[in-house]
Image 1 (cartoon, rainbow, N blue to C red):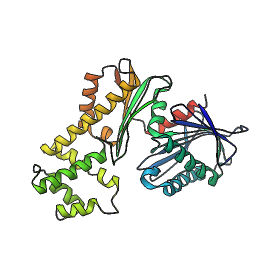
Image 2 (cartoon, helix red, strand yellow):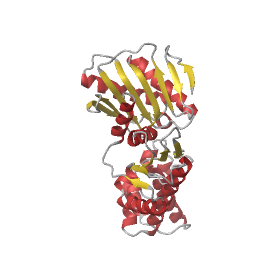
Image 3 (cartoon, one colour):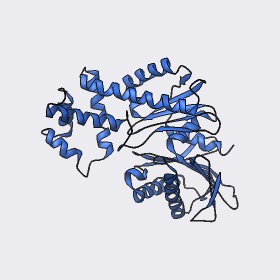
Image 4 (cartoon, rainbow, N blue to C red):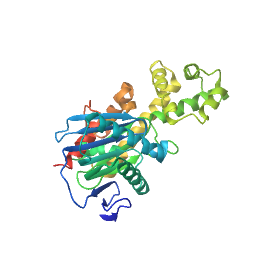
Amino acid sequence: MRMEKDIFTNDYFIYNAKGTSLFTIKKKEEKSHVPLLAIDGGATKTVAVIADEKGNVLASSEAGSSNYHVVGKTAAIRTLKTVIRNAINSLNVKSNIFDIGIFALAGIDTEADQINVAKIVKEVLVALNIHFNKLIVENDALSVLFGMTKGDPGAILIAGTGAIAFAYDGGNNPVRGGGWGHKVGDEGSGYWIGKEAIRAILKSYDGRGSDTVLSKNVLQHLDLKNDKELYNWVYSEERSIHHIAALAVFVAKAARDGDHVSKSIIECAIDELFLLIDSTVRKAGISDRSFKLLFLGGILQNNHYVRSRLTDLVSREIPQAEIIANKKKPIEFIIERGLMGLR
């Protein structure tokens, strides 16, 4: 563990050995009437929830992305301010002190990210004049994992716009796999599937690839006349990773309808996602132990074929994994993670 003085206040940050979590210890603890403020900040949306000591939601608010890698620091700060302010105002909270704050944010992938995001969070809290007796800031997937396992061995695989996995041995060894972003990673994610669809369409146009119904369906959906317009669409400054990830639904439908190019993309995505979770649980040293495995993200929760095929692969190759049926939202696990700090 290492302790560093905070640049904004007289509080202190404590980083664990992995650089994955930080805590702010106030000089003098004050009891709050509002136990928990939880934030789930992703690449697509950000949710703020105020909860009581039993995890009951008292107020909530939602806004856009707070991943500074996606929208930049200024926009991330603006989003966090908005959701927190709206949640507090809707509850008409008198106190500006919470017992615990849990900021589960996407984009915390390195120690440099940890420091950058800590500065973002502190700027938000100073601007809103909010204080915590304990503050946790960590990767959103890791926070969901801790909330799900409650200290027991477990793993989580998320495949939405991006793809990332975490595994935990029940001790002090959270291990991460993937999540390297759309430029160099995120294989098997919605963005990756959408990008592969575009590549397949352009290869077909060139004569370097097989014909695919994606050419017709995607161009029609985007209201484009031809493949060259698709090229311009992709490289437009207005285009975001979310626009490309949204094309994944057309690949899934075409695969179900028998388009062999789309089926190949989906099968490759399944293989990549299995490789991601398999390598992560092995690196964490839990592949020969019983553990719970949670699937999250639009690709795994909304695409029945992908989930079914991946479930079969995991059951056959990693029989120790118990894939849990999940109807909870990520923020519910994040609230549970925060409540662990109150107990």
